[in-house]
Amino acid sequence: MNITDLIVGNLSRNLEMLKTTIADFSDAELLVRPTPAANHAAWQLGHLVNAETSIGNNLRPGSMPALPLGFADRFTGKTTGIDDPKAMATKEELLHLLTQARNGTIAWAKALSPQEMDAPTPERMRRFAPTLAEAALGQASHMTMHIGQLQVIRRKLGKPILF
Image (cartoon, rainbow, N blue to C red; front, side, top):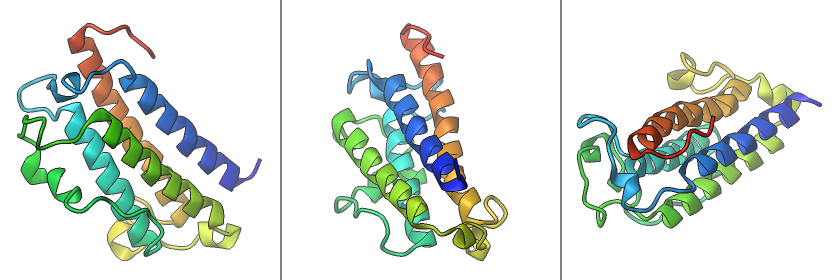
């Protein structure tokens, strides 16, 4: 196994863990907040799509699939308090876009040479991910953090413990 295999495997398994976590959520359950000030799952998934796409395009411009017109604006810091299902997106749409974005990250990571893995990220990202390899792994870490938050929503909904 090489570093590329490790990164790609981590990214792939991470997405499957998220899909497993919300497999039994309905569209309505995606809008449940574990506490009044916490983000619901629909917003978190849209945020993950936006972040994955933005970070990927910052690291390699044009490397990520385009998002539907207006999608990014629906999942910003200004929209965290919105509970209207019409303002969010369906579970099917969110999972489709998240899978596309993650596949874009995986394709980008697979295309990196061993020398590129050690290349520095843009200055604004170096505090969190100094190299391209660390940025790729950072995508998985970001999703894992949100999976933990989604697990709390599972508990609130009374769903079975998965992990």
